[in-house]
Image 1 (cartoon, helix red, strand yellow):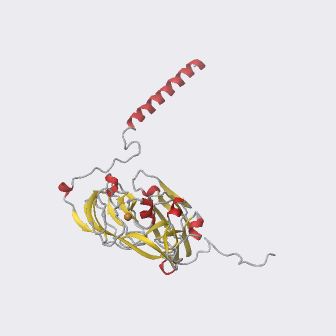
Image 2 (tube, rainbow, N blue to C red):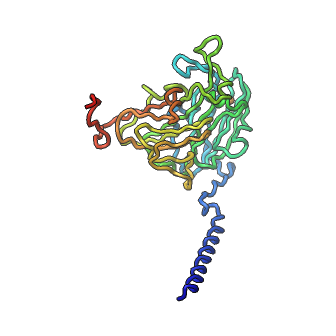
Image 3 (cartoon, rainbow, N blue to C red):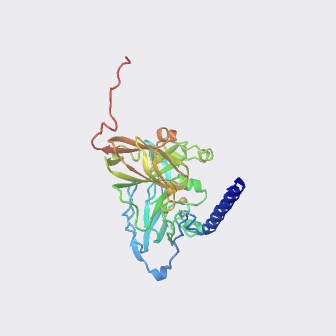
Length: 363
Ligand SMILES: [Cu+2]
């Protein structure tokens, strides 16, 4: 076969491959072939007639009872009540918190894909501000923000269908929104996929918050909200679960060697870059998405929590001792109060780590 004929055959082959590629591209216009799982189609509340389930809310770092998520949609009901009060943000320092249910972060909500979420929002009598709630898990209508504006002494109820599986932030969205969010009005809502997530030994709910405060004129231990620090994006405190040292000492997370822990870690207003000192996230649900076509990361030293998101990570602890879960923008962990402690009990494995020679004078 001559070189010219070989060249023609090669050209024909390339053209055939190109044609196949173009053909597959036209097939890829179908969303599932493009890697996007078809969205959960909304169902009719009146046709489904879902069973009412009253969600028992609990304080962080605990999560409420995890549902089976067997594919039968439910109507999950709960009440959030706004509470404004002064409380300690750091030892000897108080801050005027704005909260849902008196908690920072607000209680975690856990539902299943396809459930309806029926929220009653009450704004306490005596509140200074109007409040509302925007669920990132909701579709349309400002995430419920448009439907849920309540003045002091008012309440409202709205319902949305959870059409996206994943871990999401919810927060107050009344102007000035940064003031309400960075004063404590944020929480997480977890929409589990049908069949749930793989079993683990412990699940913890953590949310980092950046707080902007300055000493009041009358009392340096009584801080007030600082618009100047907000404008400068210079938080006075960055903390996990509402105050400096909230998840340390007696309140540190407690785990045994060999146990697998799932962390739900959110940030409503700022980024965080979380890292376990002495460990690696075995698995990260990037962006907090449980969509089967979403990205997962494995064996990651540090993972990003974008502002306004909840990232889900898993780690099996392999060696005992004290671990720190830190924002590896370390000034926030060491200077502004963020660090979380995890105490791991169990037998040391010298094959993993051992002291060959303790510190001694240089020879
Ligand atoms: Cu608010």
